[in-house]
Image (tube, rainbow over all chains, first blue to last red; front, side, top):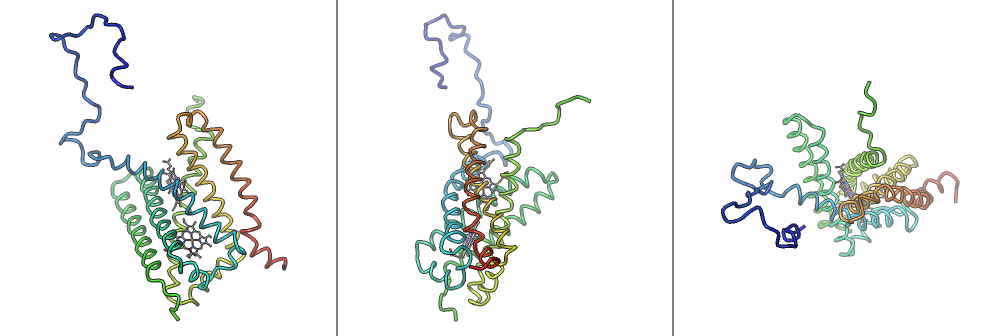
Length: 156
Length: 126
Ligand code: HEM
Ligand code: HEM
């Protein structure tokens, strides 16, 4: 609601004038140099937004992936090296898998970060669990990306 | 003994628990899945060997379980997004949860044969 809508429509006598100014109310989350480092940015808000945006995209990417791998064309029976070679011959499916890899890993890792913050109460436990989480997520993204870009159908 | 002091959030709480459990499960699967896919860089035989485990009847059943987890997480995730962004979302959160459960049951019934066809054909012949 904007400020205008809260002022009375009629020009009623105001309790405030030049000599009696209305008290200034500080915005509740004004950031100053004394604000703790952890709450000085909007990081958590962007994280929240990212979970929702990536979630919408992952519905298409992951459910599409499962449809192709597990449902169409005989289900899991058809999967093998030759099948993967056929799929990654197309830049479209390479891009699909690459985007899915990055979004799913970041979405899942950010979700796990929330869960660690919820349950690990000791500072040290949180630190180590997050170090483990970021290592695993970084490893997954680097390995998966390398595999897509260096895939060689004639490895034999 | 004071009654009713223990928080029991009904459907909303349990859907949150299920969303959390399925999210963790999918993340762990993804980690293993990227490892097994990376064997295409070792040799065709190494990759086909690991994919053979996906075709084992017990693992095939676990794949059906993975589909169950992902379908719930995806549908309920859309519900969470609707609660946050749709002006009437919070008011209809319970109805939306039953919608999620309904769609989930239909999709799971539809996925039963396609996902398990490998095992069904192996067990009962073609
Ligand atoms: C298929 C589409 C998906 C949608 C629509 C979706 C949606 C969401 C949403 C909206 C949240 C935030 C929940 C909240 O703030 O309360 C969330 C949390 C989470 N998601 Fe997903 N997600 C999807 C796929 C995935 C995948 C593929 C993974 C794993 C790699 C995953 C793992 C998680 C985890 C671990 C959380 C944190 C749960 C919590 O804090 O309780 N999600 N998801
Ligand atoms: C049991 C079910 C699944 C099967 C049988 C399966 C099968 C495959 C296959 C054959 C590939 C090779 C490339 C291609 O054909 O596109 C692949 C790649 C990939 N899959 Fe899946 N998939 C499954 C579930 C999932 C799920 C649930 C996710 C996401 C959470 C996922 C994410 C990926 C990613 C990111 C890649 C690329 C890997 C890389 O970069 O090396 N898959 N999958």
